[in-house]
Amino acid sequence: MNEKNKKEILSRGAFATSIGAVIATLGSAIGLGNIWKFPFIAGENGGAAFLIVYIASTILVGLPVMISEIALGRKARANAITTMQKLNPKKGQPWWLIGALGALAAFTIMAFYTEVAGWVYAYIFKSLNTSGLSTNPQVTEKAFTDLITSPWQSLIWQWVVLGIVSVIIIKGVSKGIERVTKFMIPSLLVMVVIIAIRSLTLDPVATSKGLSFLFRPDFSKLGWDVVLIAMGLAFFKLSVGMGTMITYGSYWQNDQNIPYRTATVMLSDLAVSLLAGLAIFPAVFAFGFEPASGASLMFITIPAVFASMPFGQIFMVLFFILASFAATGAMISLIEVPVAYINENFNISRLKATIATNLTLALIGSLAALSNSVLADFKLFDLTMFDLFDYVSSNLMLPIGGLFIAIFVGWIWGKKNIEAALNNAGTLNNHVIVNVFTFIVRFITPVLIIIILLGGLGVF
Ligand code: TRP
Image 1 (cartoon, rainbow, N blue to C red):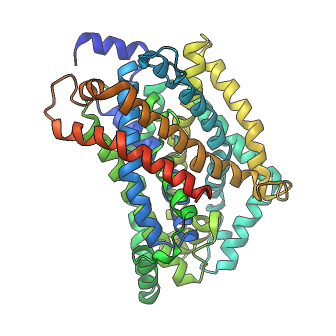
Image 2: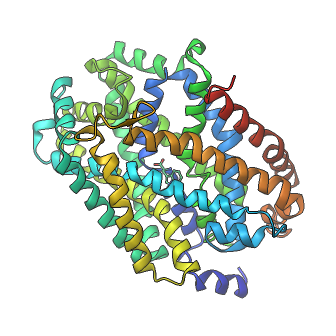
Image 3: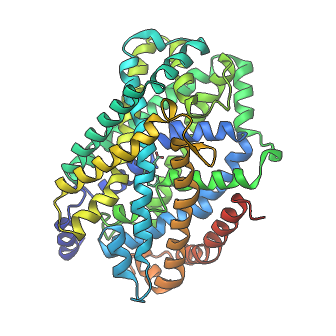
C-alpha cells in the first residue's frame, strides 16, 4: 500500500490491519439475519423452494450490489451520501438521494432490529435461570411470550441495546468494530455447528423431516410475494441497498481484491444461515413445534435443543452471548451510515451525532418494541409496526436502493471506472470477472429487481 493511500484512509479512521475491513464487513453481514430471520422466513415460506430463490437472488442481485457498493465507497472514501455526490459525473442528477434513502432505511431497520437484539440480550439472563430451558414447547413458548408481551421489558432491553451500540460507535471505527468481530464470528460458527449436530441427532425421523423441509423443494409454494421476500432477505443478509457497504467500502484498502473478498463474505454468510437452518428445523420436528412459528422460531426451538444436551445451560448462555455480539456488529454497521453522514457533512462530533441518532431511534423503536403488547392492535396495511418496519425496509427500501446503485454503477459510473476499481488500477489480472460483473450489473440485476418488485407488489 502506498503512502498516499495510507494517509488518505488513516485520516478518516481506518481498520487497523489489512484484513480488518473485510472482517468488519463480514461482521455487518452476519447477524440476526442468519440465526433469527433466515430460519423463520424460510419456515414461513415453505422451506426448500424459498431457499433456491434466496440463493439465486443472493448471487444475481445481492452480490453484484455488494461489489458495487464496496467499489464506490473505496473510490470516494466518504459516507454514502457524499460518495454519490463525489462520483457522479452528471452533477445535475440527484444520485445522492440513494444515500439519503439509505439513511432512512437504516432507521427503519434499526427500529425493529434493536428490539430483536433486546430479546437476545434478555435471553442471556433468562438462560442463567433454567425456567425457559425445556424440551416442552409450551414452556419455551411461554418464556418467550412473557418477555415480548411485557411493555417495560421490551423497552428497557431495547434501550440497553442502543446504549451499548452507542458506546462502541463513539469509540470509533477500528478499535470498536474490529476487536469485537474478530473473535465473535469464528466462535459463533463453532457454536452453531454444535447446536446443529445436537439437533440432527435428536431423532432420526425428525431429522429426515427437517432435512427434506429445508432441501426438498415444492415449487407450488412459490408466488411472486414469496420471491420478493426471498430477494428482500438477500439484500438484508448482505447488508446492501442502503449504503452500509459504501460506508464500509470507504475503509477498505486499495490493494484488496473486491470481487474475491466480497464473494468470500457472501459464501461465509450463506454457510452460517444454512447451519442455523440445520440447527433449527430437525429440532422443530423432533419437539413438535410449528415450522411457520414466525419471529419466535429461534427463541423457542434453540432452548429446547439445549435442554436436551449435557451442559445445555452453559451452552445456552454462551450461544446468546455470541448471538448478541453478532447482532451488535450488524447494528454498528447500520448506525454508522447516519453517524458518518452527520459527522462528516455537518461537522458535528461523532459523540453528538451518535447521541442524536440513538435518541431518535429510541423514539421510533418504541413503536416496534410495543408491537407485541400495548400497540398490538395498532396496524397499518394489516401489519404491526414491528412487521411494517421489517417488511418495508427489506422488501421495498433495500431493493429500490439496490436498483439505483446497480444502475448508477453499470450505466453512469461505467465500464472504465468499474474496471479500474475491480482490477485495482491494473494490478490484478481479472478481465473475465470484470466483464461478467459489468454485464450482470447492467442487464441482470436491475431487470430482476424491477420484475420482482412489480411482481411482489401485485402488478402482474
Ligand atoms: N446483515 C445483517 C443481518 O443479517 C443486518 C444488517 C446490518 C443490515 N447492516 C445492514 C441489513 C444494512 C440491511 C442493510 O443481521
